[in-house]
Each structure stands twice: as C-alpha cells, then as structure tokens.
Length: 377
Image 1: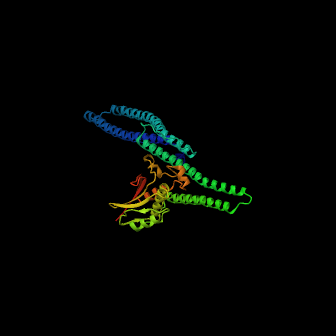
Image 2 (image 1 turned 30 degrees about the vertical axis):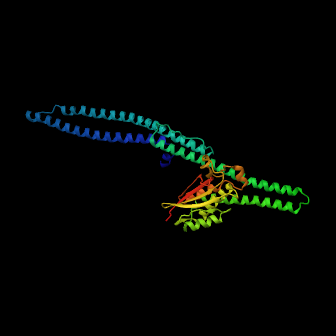
Image 3 (image 1 turned 90 degrees about the horizontal axis):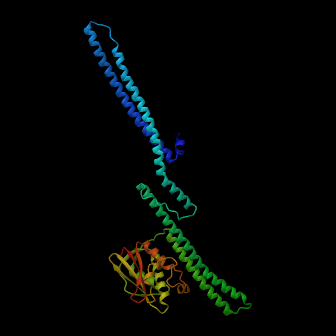
C-alpha cells in the first residue's frame, strides 16, 4: 500500500486526499444523524405506546386496535429515505471531491512541471531557460520561481565569468610561449649562432618565462582566494609594516605621512596588496615617475593611499580596473609585463579583511588607489 502511494503523482494524492476527507466527513454526519433519528424514534414509540394504553385502561382492558404498530411505519420510512439521501449525496460529493482534487492538483502541479522541465534543460547545459511564474499564481510558487530564476542568473553569470577567465588566462599564457617559440626558431635557423645571438635569445626567453611565472603565481593566488582561504591575522604596527612593504615592492615607492597605530591583518596578504598597487603605479608612471604610499586614520579604520603621476584612470574605468584581466591600456600593460590580475587580487584580499578598495584621481596628477582596513587602534 505504501509503495502504491509513493508511486502516485501529486494529482492522484490530492484527489484521494480530498475523497478521503469527504468520506470521513459524510460518515461522521451520517452516523450522528442516524443515531439522533434512532433516539427520536424510540422516544416517539414510547409516547405512542403510553397513549395507546391509556384508553385501554379506561375501557376495562379492551383489545388494542394495532394503531401503535402501524404508527411506527412512517418513522422507519423517514429513516430509510434519509439514509438513501445521504448515500446519494455522499456518492455525488465523493465524485465531485475526486474531480476537484484532480483539477486542483493539475493546476498546482503545472508550475512544478515547468520547474522540472527547466531543471532538466539546465542539467543538459542550457542556462538560458527561466520559470517566469504567472503573477496570479500562489505566493509560495512566485517566491520559489523568483528564487529559482535568481539562482539561474547567478549560475549563468558565474559560468560566463569562468569561460572569460579561462579564455583570458589561455591568451595570456599563449603570448609569452609564442614569443619563446619564435626566439628559439630564429636561433635554430642559424647554423653557427654567435654568442651575442645566444645571449639575446636567452635574455628574451628568460623575460617571457618571468611573465609566465608571474601569471601562474597570480592565478594560484586567485584560486586560493576563491577557495575561501581566509587571512591569518596577526597584530601589526601599521606604520612600520607599510614602510617595509613599500620598500620591498618592485620599483620602490616614496613614503608619505603614515598613520600610527596597530591593526590585525594577514601580513603576507596585505604586503601583496601594497606590492601589487606599487607595481601597478610604477608601471604607469614609468621608471622616472613618482609613486607614493601614505596612510591616514579614519576612526577605527586605516586608509592606505598609493598615488602615481602617470596618465591616471578615466572615470568610466575606475570600477572596471578591479575586474580580472582588465586593462585600461592593453598594449602598454602587456609590454610592461602586466596581466591585469594585480588589482583583482588586491580587491579580493581587501574584501576578505572586511575592507574596501577604490580608484580615484591623485593629487600627483595620475591615479590613486586607496583601500581601507577595519580594526585600527
């Protein structure tokens, strides 16, 4: 029995449930009315017998005329009619309940069947279908449909970003590998390459391998951050830490005013943020340009500014520069060795610390990238 019930669909279950409710309700009403009618019939019989005995006693014990037995017949007929009426009405109500339950279940199950069809399409790799629940549907179904569509939107966006990420990473890796292959092929066409040619190819190959190494390192850093590897916080002296991190950054940076205080942060991660921002500023300002690191205290937050006197970032690009593989000047950035991942890594690290990061115009005339960390004391 249980297996048969489990094999039933929603329509069958609702129809049977409606029918069972109707049967139970009519059964209770029928039993109650039947019991009440039996009680009333017994009372009437007693009254009629009492009335029949009273004249007999007055007449000196004459024989009864049989009226009492005949008077019971209309009551029994009424009981029989009521029973038949209940059976007919109950049967009609049962059929109506089964039909209503089936139709109601069919209407209720229609959105669920659309959910199932959409889920099957998504499982097949198509993320474009949406539920689009009828606005007149039940509130629960509308909420479920909206949540399902929102989930599909997020999945579609995630897969699109993943495809773009893989495509960009492949392109970034292919460029230096193509350059290395070209250098080796040129060298291989020479029968007796001189030392200068070998050194030239060696220098170019090592430079391209350095680009590959930096790109792989940045991709691994992003992968670890995406996996949810959180910061390992330690208590840091804000000024001393920034001074050391700025000095160790590629190309170096000039130090401005530094806020005094202590803050809990992951030293390796925040050092990587400072290094990426200084390297980005140096790339755009050039070897002779100025890159400056400074910090200020804003309540319990530490704000760190990295300024340069390069060409700056157009207002329309100031949010997009934190996207992965984004470049405001692609040709120059690639020639300088950038892969467009440094600022994306910086944003991920800062947000993992509960902070914020943004780009704006610098007082030096170029770009300023600022990030804030909570917990300064």
